[in-house]
Image 1 (tube, rainbow, N blue to C red):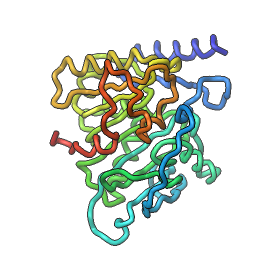
Image 2 (image 1 turned 30 degrees about the vertical axis):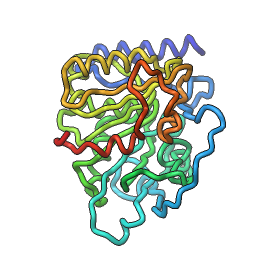
Image 3 (image 1 turned 120 degrees about the horizontal axis):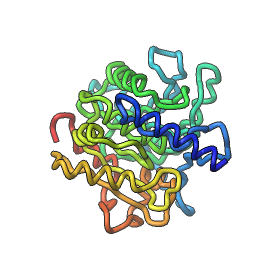
Image 4 (image 1 turned 180 degrees about the vertical axis):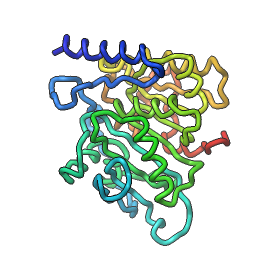
Length: 297
């Protein structure tokens, strides 16, 4: 199986390297239906108990085909959304390959998206960001976050709901982290105000670096990750910062942690467990993203 996985990854890399636009990150788990391939699990290391919050926002499922969105998704709106007229910041969370499903065929598939990340925190009453925001967690049903479909989805939700379109934030784990970077490096006019890719990998070139440098980015990664090498984020952040961007890219690494660093990042339980040689985890990612407005860093 390891040989098969290596061949699949090598084929992806060769194909991307020969394409006209060789900037799309590869999927570290090309066969999510096979339980023997490396997965996208992002459990919190150890036994961590999170506080229950009094958040009264609402999270509801919107299965594929319910509206014109190219993906099914979970929609969270803060408590005041139903009564005020404000436009809210938008956080989009992209899951890993283990949560792929088609809610149009099987509506219960959408529950997979609640397994990790902000959608899980909301469902389990652990959600308490310093600033209220709309949270949308789409579900990939195509095996990969196809860049044009994701771009269309971002546009759809940002105009369908009451969103401050200068405050659209993107984050994802593993395959979703790859897709987060892919949106930054694929479009010069992307709508993203700040991004947090977790456990991501990719194929880097000059265009990739130049485009990604236009958006504040904070990358998290496990130093013992055998699915997506930490060498990639190290090289990317170094290349971005060599361009002297308006906002320097950040990199936080967890010593001794493999591909399982999603939840410790989203819940901020990873604070104090990071490698001191890199950027400190001294602020939760939601507060960090909220500092940035598209076009106003």
